[in-house]
Image (tube, rainbow, N blue to C red; front, top):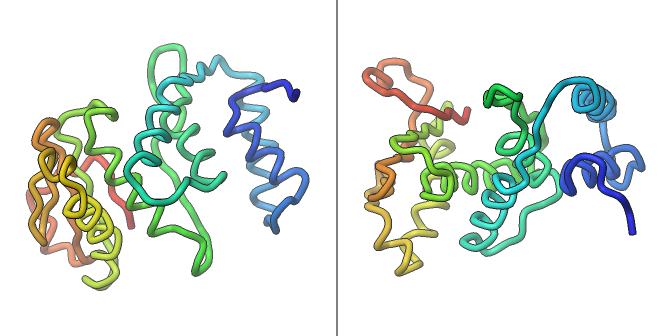
Length: 192
C-alpha cells in the first residue's frame, strides 16, 4: 500500500503528472514541483474533512464522478490553509482546451458553493462570458440538476435568471462581459 504524503487527491495528481499518465505540459510539471516545495516548507494545514465534503457533495448530486484534476483542485481550494486560518489559494486559473471539462467543473463548483455543506451564507456566484449562451451553459447545468431532483427543488428557488439556495441565500447568476450589467453585484466567486 502506498503511503500518502500530502492528501490522496494531491498525491494522485502529482503521480499522474510526474509519471505522465496523461499528456501534460511543462507548466503542470513546474506547478507540481512548486507546490511540493510550498507544502514541504510552509506551515500549511490540510483539512481533509473540507476536501471530502466538497467531493462527496458534488458526486452525490451530479451524474458523473469527478476527474482526478477536479479532485486535485478541490483539495487545493477547500483543504489548504495557513495556520492563521487563511486560505493558501483564493484564485485559480485553468487554461485548457475544448472538451477538457471546464464547464462541468464550473457547474459542480457553482452548485457546491451555494450549499449548506460549503457553509457560507450569501455566497454569490457569477458566471461571466462574452456571449449570453456561453455564460448560460454551466448555469443551465445546475438549473436542470435542481429541476430534475425533487429534494434539490425544495432547497432552491430557480428562475431562468437566478438560482438561490433557500437556506444559505447564496445565488448563481450568469452575465456577459458588459460592465454595464454588473452594477450592484457583490459576487464571492466569478467564473470567466
